[in-house]
Amino acid sequence: METKQFKAESKRLLDLMINSIYTNKEIFLRELISNASDALDKLYYNSLTNSKIDVKKEDLKINIEINKTKRTITIEDNGVGMTKEELETNLGTIAQSGSFSFKESNEKKEDIDIIGNFGVGFYSAFMVAKKVEVISKKVEEEKAYKWSSSGAEGYTIQEANKETEGTKIILYIKENSEEEKYDDFLEEYKIQEIVKKYSDYIRYPIIMEVTRRELKEGSKDEYIDKKEEETLNSMIPIWKKDKKDVSNEEYESFYMTKFADFEKPAKTIFLSIEGGISYKALLYIPSHLPYDYYTKEYEKGLQLYSNGVLIMDKCKELLPDYFGFVKGLVDSQDLSLNISREMLQHDRQLKVIAKSIEKKIKSELLNLLKTEREEYEKIFKTFGTQLKFGVYNNFGINKDNLKDLIMFYSSTEKKLVTLSEYVSRMKESQEKIYYAAGETIDKIDMLPQVEGVKDKGYEILYLTENIDEFVIQVLGSYNEKGFSNVSANDVNLESKEEKEKLQRKNEENKDMFAVMKEAITEVQEIRFTNRLKNHPVCLTTEGAISVEMEKVLNSMPNNQNIKAQTILEINENHPIAEKLKSIYASDKELLKKYAKVLYSDAKLIEGLSLDNPTEFSNLICELITK
Image 1 (cartoon, helix red, strand yellow):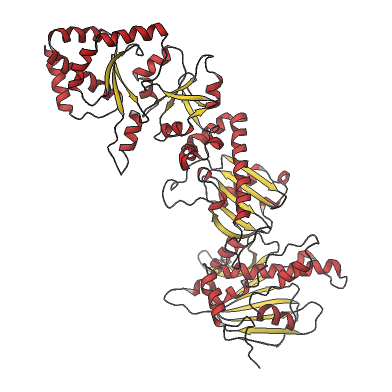
Image 2: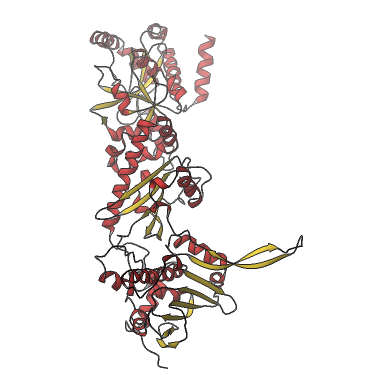
């Protein structure tokens, strides 16, 4: 019996495919099952055009058998089979594909759905097998043939005994090595696990005898093992069923099982697209954050299927980072995969699908916001930070795509509102969207600057997350309305007469403020204000950095000791104003002490730490005892 050399030559090419192209050894079973499915497809298709072939689709199947003693795994189908010449052509030439040729010759005909387009998947068997035998009998042929190979050295083909039509592949599994434990592939649970992961939606039943432990009849504690045939795969993907035939409970149950979640999803999104690139997508918005969501271990991405066969478990290119919390899958028969079927050849196809998915997720969220407000607010409270990060990230390139999805707490509505809702309620003469930032809603509500703006009847957005002010700065405006921090020095809510009166008072007392500034050089300026209602003092800022942003930036690991440019404002209508004037006239050193106390008071209101709390305490005690 003559040993033939592979037509594609060389040990190097086969070694490359076995050791480099495939990154995961368990892929071998996916490839062989896909080939078996192709053989069944071909037989069924041929039966539709050839009256001599009598085939019932329900009789077509794939069998898997494990023999631990012989260290073999057998994958057998009752499909179309191969002649001696086809064994030579398909298996003797690396990268020659019978499935691809079949599909090419029938590409204009309907109902052809061939998985194995690449001709190299078969050789993945050599990742786990030291020897591979293929015994095949072609439909309507009398003779069967056996193809046998131990790798790059070559192969043999000879006549064989096989009564039934179809193909049987026998893998002689390698012995364990220091690096690999090949014994695992001889365990029933491992085969079940691989089939469920990669081939669960192959359209034909994948059958294997599995061991069941049962209580021996008549015994209370003695068990016996029984072998039973079990179908390992689901066959029909839930996303390929007609949507009207699938209940919400079934979609939710699928999610909880598929993605190992103990809670139902907050939202299920189904997408079916026909066109240049056809695909189906089943997407879920979880009802809670994954425990590792904000760690480096978390991987975003959707499962990617090609004709029901899992290609990638986490295809991150299908989701933008700001929708990284979405889980689900995409299935397309139009993907151009590379020869290992583990990645895509054409990035353009992924980009088209990803853009479509992004638009669908956004439209579903907007619709939820409009029709089921409470449900949307729950989702936003869970994943709103990620949406805000999407606005801020990459210099705001996605801000227009996300600005209608973000929400902030409203001082008047006492709940989360959108920017659109805020703008719709603005006063006719109002030019700015007012906001205030702080650690909590209650703390913001107690800010002196907030009290004054609220007293004039303006709605304020409360920003409580570290990222909020950065988001506002990136947005710049909304519907041509700019943003204004109520703690900024440029908030002008006074009438012309009030401004002129205040300007005169500040000019009259500039010498007093100069003396006070000698004691507190950290501030840019000290002045009277009429923005406050009951509070004596407040800190305002000028420039891009607010007090809250200063705290956020300086809390980061690479603390650069950034300082906001602050202004100490004193309520001109508070008794403290007259007190300061009186002290200035009689005791300028005492005035400096008052200035330090007032500045420390303003810092504490803003949640800033004091550089010298001991000095502040001593000053308080000194002034109280005077």
